[in-house]
Length: 325
Ligand SMILES: CC(C)(COP(=O)(O)OP(=O)(O)OC[C@H]1O[C@@H](n2cnc3c(N)ncnc32)[C@H](O)[C@@H]1OP(=O)(O)O)[C@@H](O)C(=O)NCCC(=O)NCCS
Image (cartoon, rainbow, N blue to C red; front, side, top):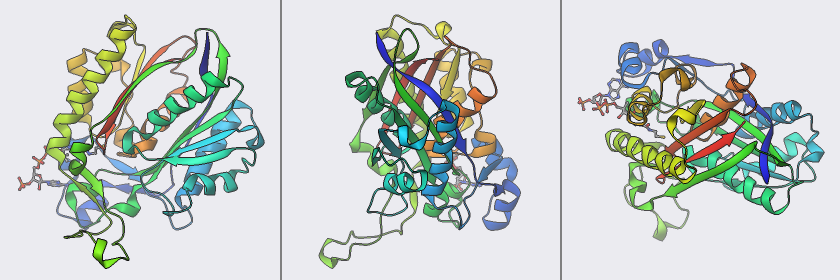
């Protein structure tokens, strides 16, 4: 049966690293608090020479190189982000121009931390209809541009970066097996970023808090564990699989306590879960593709390995995806 297979992966992290020690100088916090409550030790921050489309394009270029493809080979470019370069046009169009994917059509999708899985799911459905299509899916964020650096509740959590995968159709066992994706818009208020105030005064929202991430951390925490657990169990059950069939789990990198809680509930051994949150923080839509690229380049993935990805974020949007590497 034809499946969407990953031909190559890539990622990019800006050089500038912001440590917890530096954050101690900026807000009332401590390295100890951040590490024990979140598992984060440092995060990468984009500089003025690294607008989002350049960060995204670097990851995309590395994925194309890994796949042995030229930019002209790409038919579709999907960019998942919640920190776009502009409101209009899509950041995907800027990435297209930067990369030279002149034969592709390109668009953004917005599903926050679930964005990459939503993009891969979409790519696999295009590929099911047209197996020779080459689809570049990128998750990229410059969340540092959406953070209130005086708000200790949020500024310690997030980081910048991008991850990417190129997919196309192939016969056989390898590829995207299935995914389960969900949203619940009733819970939008747990995590959101307002845009700039409307130019139409009649349509301005009352109590505008600025274009920064607003978050109810404790409620998100509970929902994250519960919702990812449900998505993973449904996905595995649909394929008559159990956790012991999984070779590697790539969870969204938001908080080590969320990951450990989920791991314990699902009974996943610690050595089967990849963590880079200590170095990268929460990079939202970029988190899973950066992790996937790192494990691929470290040689931790072998042909035939069963990889489980799961994610949650603003929307709320969440889901799980199974991939035979
Ligand atoms: C944000 C989070 C780390 C907070 O951890 P927590 O154990 O739930 O901590 P609490 O919310 O109970 O806050 C405890 C105290 O720490 C304080 N605090 C918050 N951030 C702090 C920081 N950076 N440094 C020091 N203290 C901090 C709070 O103000 C609160 O103080 P108070 O009791 O005087 O009001 C945790 O809730 C979390 O990770 N939630 C999920 C967030 C997430 O993943 N968001 C992205 C989703 S994709």
